[in-house]
Image (cartoon, rainbow, N blue to C red):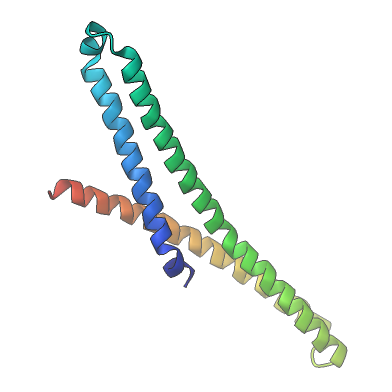
Length: 145
């Protein structure tokens, strides 16, 4: 469910990062190929300004991508903490009423922790797969005009 909610944001960020990286590489290539012309016509400051703007756009795109990655990475630990807190409240009430014993309470608490950890690991794998798939998709578009 979380992936479905975050899918559009992930696509947007990945597309922006790819576009910014392509623009940066294109800018470096153009500067290298036209270096003698830039020197001959004394356009070094203009070329530097253009490259600086491109580099700044790349930095902004990667920073936005890093922020999304951080937010996505914090979701499952947050969800695990809330689940464990909710179970602690419910479990303590059950202990007080005599519906469960302390061993069951502690074991179930540990299970919540392990399930949360496994969900987090699975989500990280899904994000890596999404990023790899996105890269393959971009490559396919570039190879099939």
